[in-house]
Image 1 (cartoon, one colour):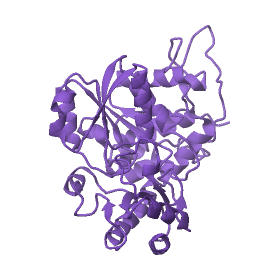
Image 2 (cartoon, rainbow, N blue to C red; image 1 turned 30 degrees about the vertical axis):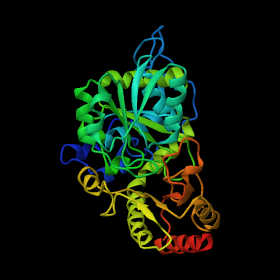
Image 3 (cartoon, one colour; image 1 turned 90 degrees about the horizontal axis):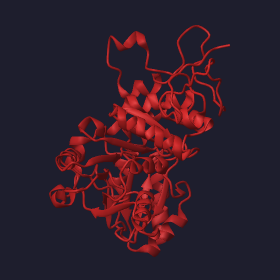
Length: 400
C-alpha cells in the first residue's frame, strides 16, 4: 500500500533549473511522489486519529498541545496530509508558510487572537462585513479597540497608527473596489510599530502578493476564488515569520478550526484551475465594466480596470490584473432589487468567486451604510460574456 507523506515542494527535477511560474505551481505543488504507481492526486483523508510513536514518545510537530515533534497524531491539532498539501500550494504562491482554516472568518479570527487584550486595530471603512462585525463585537466586550479609517489616504493615518497594534487592509475592497497603496501603508504601519494583515481574497495570490512588499500576514477566504466552485467553506492565513506561523497553528488547534478532509480535497482540486478561471472571469469583468459604464441606466461603475477609477494607476502598479469583481450603481434601492430579481443566468446570491456569476445589493446588509443604496456587486464567473451581457441588460430593462 502506498505511503502518503506530506508534500514538501514541487517537482525536484525542475526546481534547480528554473523558477516555476504561479500557473505551474498551482498544478505541481502539493502532489504525491512521482514514483511509478503513485496516484496523481491525494485521496480524501477522512481521519481524525493517526497511529502514534511507540516507546512513550510524543509526536505532532507544529500545533501540538502537549509537546513533541514527529508524525501527526490528531487532525484537530496537526491537520492531515490533505491540509498540508493545500498549505504548501498556497504558501508557495504567496511566498510564506500557510495555515489552513475551516473558513475565512476562522482565519481572520485567528489573526486577531494573536493581539493582546485591548490592542487597537485599524479597519478600513470599506471591507468584508464579517470581519467588521467580529471586530465590533470584540470591541463591545473590551477585547480590542477599533478605529475605522480611510486607507485610500495613507497620509490621514499618521496619527492613528501611533499606538495601533494592527492595520487591516483590503485592496481591492469589498464592495466598493477601492485601491490603497500597499507599500506606503505597510511602511507607515511598520514605522509606527504596527503589524499589517491583508485580506487578499479579491486579488488572489495570482494578481497580488502582499508578503513580497512587507505585509506580516495575508488572509484568504478559500471559499471564494481559491476553491472556485461554491462547494466548500475554508480559509487560509499566510506569514513569512516562523514564530507567527507557529502561533497561528496553535490558535487553529485550540479553536478547533482545522478544515475537514473533504474540504481540503475540494480546495486542492479547485486551486488547480484557479489560473484559468481567474483569467477568464477577469477578462469578462473588464469588458462588462466598460459596457456598463456606457449603459444609460447605470450611474457609476466601480472597477479598478477602468481608466477613470481613482485607483486605476495604483492598481496597475501593484497588481498583475484587476480581478473578477465589479460593482455598479442603479438609480435607487428599488431599481437594484428589481434587477436582482430579474436575472436569469447570473445567480442572485451573497457569496462570490465561483465559476458561476453572482449579484447582490450590498447596502441591504446591516453595517453597510457607506455603500450607495443602488449599488450591485457582481462577481463575474466563467459563462460566455455575451450571455452575461444579455442577462444584465434584460434585468436592468425589467427593473426600470
